Amino acid sequence: MSSILQGLMKGFGGDAGGSSGTQGAKRSNLTLSFSDNAPTWVELEQLARAQQSELGVDFWADPNEGPTHPLALKRTFGSTGPVRIKLYRDHAAWCPYCHKVWLQLEEKRIPYVMEKINMRCYGDKPPSFMAKVPSGLLPVIELDGRVVTESAVIMQLLEDTFPDHKPLMPPAGTPARQRADGLMRLERRLFSDWLNWLCSDWNHDRAKKQFEATMDVVAAEMEREGGPYFLGSDISLVDITFCPMLERIAASLSYYKGCYVRGQGRWFAAMESRPTYLGTRSDFYTHAHDLPPQLGGCAMHEEGEPVAAAIDGTDGRAWRLPLPPLSATSLPEPYSPGDNPPLDRLEAASKLVKNHEAVVKFALRGPGQPGPRPVMAPLADPTAIPALQHLPQADAALRHVVHALLVGVEAKQVSPQALQTSSSAGLPGSAVVAAAEYLRDRVGVPRDMRYPAARQLRAHLNWLIDNLTGASA
Image (cartoon, rainbow, N blue to C red; front, side):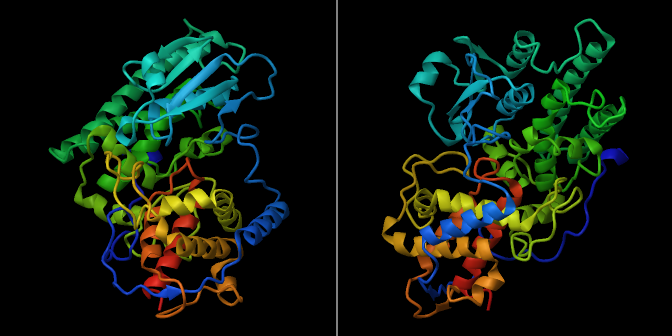
């Protein structure tokens, strides 16, 4: 494989352990009681607001304003004119074809409104949507009330209809346009070779060789015009078309095949310098578990197993404090912007404070009952019945986690609000462990928060779990 996107495999090995990940892990049945002495939600909100003011951020700002945000439902970009576009995309931000159109609208700054629709692998689609789109396929836009389907058709229509909004393709008939069109065909070839290898372990070596050959062509094309983007110094529709697939390729092939395609290539770093992309970017863990129900399964190869354990957190290290720094070459997941632990912890804490009532009930699906209508996606269980009888202890436990995120574990544990565990500390911990594991394994990126914040939340939930099970002793 080209040195531009060569593998980064190193540092994986040792015995898998710990308690993270959707597959679960063996651990002691001992579950300790714990103290209900964490700050109240009002006190935690005051602390979060003070830190946001100090760091100059506002994680409770209107998501429709400012940088690209997964919760935004109406984006005007300062325009006061009519909004001509309505985008229908999937709730969880798993669909790569929705991702393309969403990113194009953000880069072109075309005003739009959004309605989120379930993917079939995690829920039913509303009758109102099915009446408009009998196939149920996403993405869909309405342009001046006209329903348009298929991402390639939508993207070309947006270019043709809004030429004054940052053109993203060279003019028709030019050599640059011919090259761009050829690159679009190359993206389809890469997609095919990726699926051929990812979804089957039959003829592994041959499928790997074919994928790597195509990936080398892609890597060379990234630098052909001097980079860092496919067509040169600025982003184009070619990058937007490749982006969702390369994101998912990087995640899935590391997890299932032990193959890192990212290397130190400039293209990934350039994309991750764009607020538009960072607002839509998922993480390796989410894709490793959202792709199988969409594709009908992914085939694990033995070389992927230690990487999968790290991505899932079942290696006993990756989802535990202290977390190593993030960088363009960090493992198990590279992330060019790097991390800012105080800011990342504050983001996670702020999201929990703002939505604590819903989050506590969501987590109680863990000790609750499975949904009467199970779905194919392991990250989703929309009809599950939460065990609300455990609400007081789950609420208290989540307040301890938020407090630890805001002040740091070390400072918390020497404060009057320290998490105290014993066989008779007050609140029973059994249901809380199940709730914390359920929440930890279903933190969605970008749906819930950015990747650096998500890894902080997962690790702090493991801090709670380890204390309650005696694993930290």
